[in-house]
Image (tube, rainbow, N blue to C red):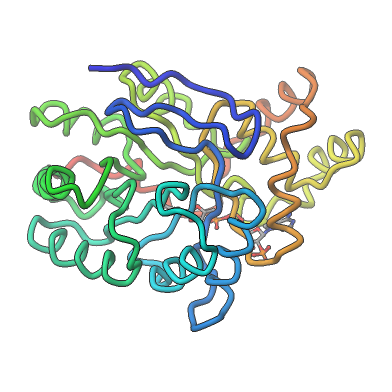
Length: 284
Ligand SMILES: NC(=O)c1ccc[n+]([C@@H]2O[C@H](COP(=O)([O-])OP(=O)(O)OC[C@H]3O[C@@H](n4cnc5c(N)ncnc54)[C@H](OP(=O)(O)O)[C@@H]3O)[C@@H](O)[C@H]2O)c1
């Protein structure tokens, strides 16, 4: 098995080679709660982000905005191969995966999906779902297959079932949710780590410690959090549907945090801004 090395993004065009050889951008746009609708928020956010150099867009069946993301990409007028699109399957199951993937692809209307993820292991049926995803990859409809919200027990479950190692595990990652056991396991086993909710869904942006660091660097607290993720070598996908914030969030490559700042952020207590299916039992 090829090992995926942790890589630090030095700009919007930085990439990493996944364990199956696919090249993936290290920085991108999240789209959860970006509103759907012709010419609406999600579509405009995607087009704007691509016009500002973003190369990676994260969506999901669950978000209900795949059609918007697809329109946003087509409006952007970029070559298909210059945009990396991630989508996810919500409820697991072999037949469901095949059926829902076709629906997702139709809505995205971009020919193929770059990375297809099992959204969560908590409902079980991961082995059969993963097999269906691998078939989609063989058919050339998906370039790379991975998982999201998988804990070590789930990753081990796939390994023990004799399945190829996922190329990516997308998990909640920010200073208050460092998931070191999962990150270490992924890195040892060639699974690229992709962080979600890097801005804590906005919930910690007024944190006192964070505000002090932001003031010292003359940056926003959102930028400090994104820079922390970048410095950890995580693929990161801050969500914004505001043009100014989309630009601000990408302005994290011409400066860096001091070692002291990183140590301070690494020392904040454990806290999560959302669900945590990583802790659910392995159900096969
Ligand atoms: N696999 C999973 O289970 C999972 C779970 C959660 C998220 N995700 C993915 O990860 C992406 C990012 O996570 P997230 O959406 O949960 O949260 P997030 O990126 O941590 O935070 C998004 C929130 O921060 C605000 N924001 C963005 N930039 C800002 C800035 N510069 N200053 C102040 N506020 C700012 C956004 O509002 P505005 O839009 O108004 O700027 C939004 O309310 C998602 O969109 C989704 O693609 C995956």
